[in-house]
Image (tube, rainbow, N blue to C red; front, side, top):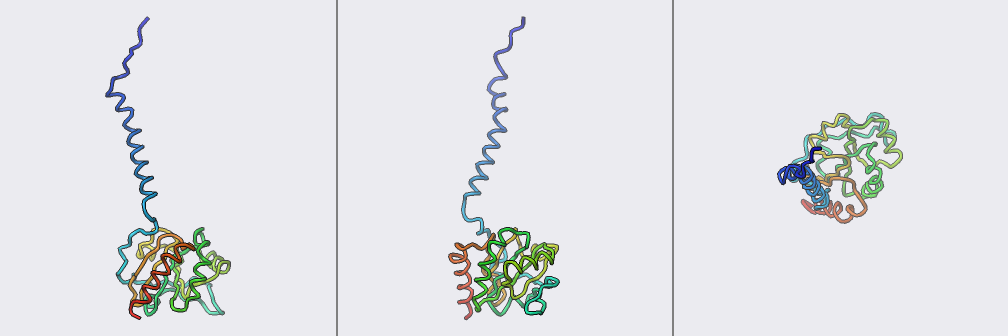
Length: 197
C-alpha cells in the first residue's frame, strides 16, 4: 500500500490557490466603494461652461399640440431663455417617475423646457406624452442616438440647464426626483436666471 503524501504543494501552492480569491475580493471591494462613494448623478461633464452642441432634430412624427405639430429642436431653441433640456424615452421607467415633476417645472414661465426623445418609436413617444403630459416647448426625435452622443448622454433620463447665451450651466445624470428638484435642479435654474438678468 502506498502512503498518500501529506504535503499538498507547500506554501507556494496555497498562495496560488488563494490568489484568484484575493483578486476577486479586491475588485469587489473597489466596486462597492465606488458604488457608495458620492452622488452618481454628479458625474462630470466636459460640456459644462461650453456652448450646447449644434442640434438640429426633427419633431416627433405625429406629435401635435392644439392641432399644430410640436416642433423639433434647433440650436436657436437653446438660446435666449434659460432652458431645461431633458433627455427622455417612452421605454425609460425613471422617465415616467420624473414626468409629473417636469410638468410642475413647466409651470415656471421664466424657463423653457425642451426634450430630446432618445432612441424611441414615434408612436410610443406620443402615447407616453398623452399619458404623462407634455411639458416640452419643443422635442426632437433622436432615433439613432446620434445627438445623444454629441451631448455626452450616459443614459436616460438626463437633464441639462442651459443659460440664455446657449452655454451648458449644469447636467443632472439620472431622473429628476422630488428631492433633487428642490435641492439641486431649481437652485441651478435660479443661478442661470440670475446670470445676465
